[in-house]
Amino acid sequence: MKSNVRVRFAPSPTGYPHLGNIRTALFNWLFARHNNGTFIIRIEDTDVARKVDGATESILESLRWLGLNWDEGPEVGGDFGPYFQSQRLEIYHKVAQQLVDEGYAYKCYCSTERLQKMREEQTKNSAPTGYDRRCRNLSNEERTRLEQQGITPVVRFKFPLEGETRFNDLIRGEVVFQNSLMDDFVLLKSDGYPTYHLANIIDDHLMQISHVLRADEWLSSTPRHIQLYQAMGYEPPIFAHLPIILGPDRAKLSKRHGATSVLEYRDLGYLPEALVNFLSLLGWSLDDKTEIIPIADIIAHFSLERVRKTGAIFSRDKLDWMNGIYMRALTPEQFTAKALPFIEKGLPAEIKRPISRDYLLNIAPLIQDRVKLLKDTTELVEFFFNDNLTYDHNMLLGKNMTWSDVVRAIERTLAVLHDITEWEEKILEQLIRPMTEELNLKASQYFGILRVATTGRAAAPPLFQTMAVLGKERCLNRIEKAREIASHKAAAGT
RNA sequence: GGCGCAUUCGUCUAGAGGCCCAGGACACCUCCCUCUCAAGGAGGAGAUCGGGGGUCCGAAUCCCCCAUGCGCUACCA
Image: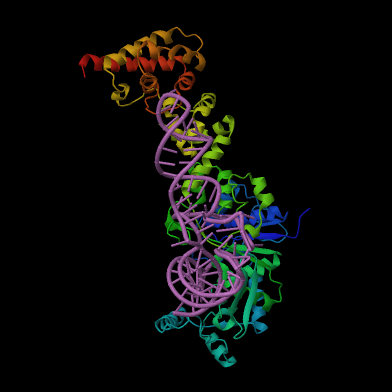
């Protein structure tokens, strides 16, 4: 049973959604789900000049990826459509005209040049900026004359000159603005499109939005909205202004802060559930210590009362840590399924495709603990697939050893390995570990040689597990190669 | 410049008059585990709660002033 809570995420397709935008979407979604309400997507495509191709799709894709499903909006429709503002122009025109007729708004013929000049003048004199209301009280004759000049007017709201506008913000409490400080803002642009203020109010009303949860940057224009609601005779929704997400320089997160597009995080290999968990904790908290919270619990406990007022700097370090936690919580099967596409894409071209899912499934437990981002898996997994190991040969030489020590160790190992019929971790360890003593080496020296020989790396998953997964043939071939290298070195007397 | 909002460890945060000479997490450091790298475990360091005044027996928590930061100040959202 749905409640009356109806919230919307109303992005403008002027770019690719970044973490800040999507966090607002997330809080709306959480609020809707917690209250058993309706989550609506409305595309505010009223800025023709800044519109970016593909932005809408990218926004929807970001939401889908994170699992923020919507009940009404693009693709799914709903009873209050259309959900693209560019398809609702007639409605805005009608209401704007009505406001003009009723004396709440007026047509303004001022040119952008004049407005710009006016603003410069105001700034120069350290006066408050804002439209000087020149067209507010035009006589009919003047209006006709300007019309005849062929000027397409904009429609401006006749903001009350006196009094104050107040409202109660669910997060910030009561906020008061002096009306005398507000100017007559534009409702309808000369290109026929409405401004945010007009379209937003009309649609929120028509779509029966109960709560407006939006970023803090809108707080200052809320009195405009309140006044508009009153002029139209609409009941305003409840407002809650969310803290914004900041870049490392404490300024509002934006494109210039780098990789902030949500889809980039997907492509880097963050898990959507990790990102959701992390984002939900940017401004909201469950209690004084819980950090890893399943989505069902976030929904169950989400409340605006526990939303902070201050902007938060997004920290990649902590996200990475959290992603690692979610990564480790995956079953090997899940992990394999998620890592596979990244590995297919990332492994060198000479390695034959498709890569074996079964083989990868065996590798998974060895690397899962070591992965922070799915993109990292390629690097971690590479030596399992690449039989042409290239490494600095000197890595074979353990600390305080000579090359002939290395040759001897390898030869003894090879002899033992050849006879193994059951190539398993336990058996490998049973046979090889005791050799440490026989060879009079430290485990770190001996295992180190074998690690480099089989993996070409100084750091890799535990030796016996790794060898078991690699298989007998691969191990023997690689160790043989290492023996040749070491023999040459020994012969050269280096 | 005007208006608005905010201000607790480097960062994310807990805290709604005594439970706080401020708790948790990330990052950092040390140790343990250990064949390497991780993961895991145990510790450590890190905030005179932006500053100053009040109120109160008692303030991070209430009030006032200041400072600083951010946001808005577009025919952008």
